[in-house]
Image (cartoon, rainbow, N blue to C red):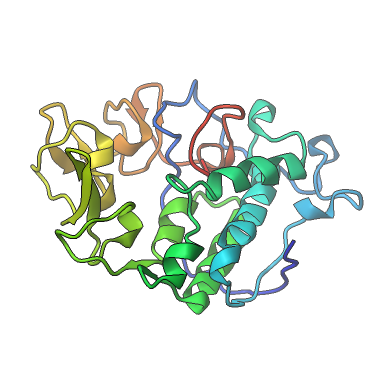
Amino acid sequence: MRHLILFASITLALPGCDGGGSTDAGVDSGRARDAGDEDAGRCTEFTPEYCPVVYPMTPIPASEVCEAFVDAFCRANGLCCSDDTRVYRTFEACRIDQMARCEDDLIGFEFPERISSGIVGYNQGAAGGQFSSLATMGDMCVPIRYGDAIMSIYRGTIARGAECTHTVECAEQGVCFDAGGISTCIGAPQRTDPCDGNDNCAHSGLRCNGSMGCDFRLPLESACVENRDCESYNCRMGFCFDPTPDSTYCVDIGVPGPAFE
């Protein structure tokens, strides 16, 4: 596993975390664990993997994206989530589950084969910079969205109208759209474009409204169904709330879904 040390600059602040298409089952406290709290059982001489550290902007090879970001997220899961039922039993249990999700070819965040073939562009330095920011803020329990930040590292090369297998392959923020069994890159969805769910609009930071059209996400205190309905990416008890450490770093363990959610 990568062992990473000091970087003092925080450059990225993103909104909270999508809970995989489901609303939270109650109002979370958002209380961050105290790394020195004996009751939390974290950051001891026996569990140094939970101890907050600071990070260099070391370039990250394309095949090590998941290893780096999963390590940081799992530490934040143990340090920041106040709901013990949504904290992995051990750091290694978190790594195993989150690595499997992150390396998934359909919903994951690592694309070494596409990069080596030239279908997707990747900058190791940009990845290292993104990692140092996210990991630093994770140790501070700042609500952030790992998935969006990781995907911003990649640049697709496939032009609109050409066949594709994944949205990451499409140039100019396009989307890989399946029509009749053939997937092609199309332009990113715009407001009022037709949709049948939030998946159709999410790439442009939009939601699918009740009239089945892409639309702006909802402000705080608006009625919502799932996290992606909200600007804050945090739908709780049917309303949009500010993101919290719990909405970002707690995990519904045993429930399938993307990494970092």
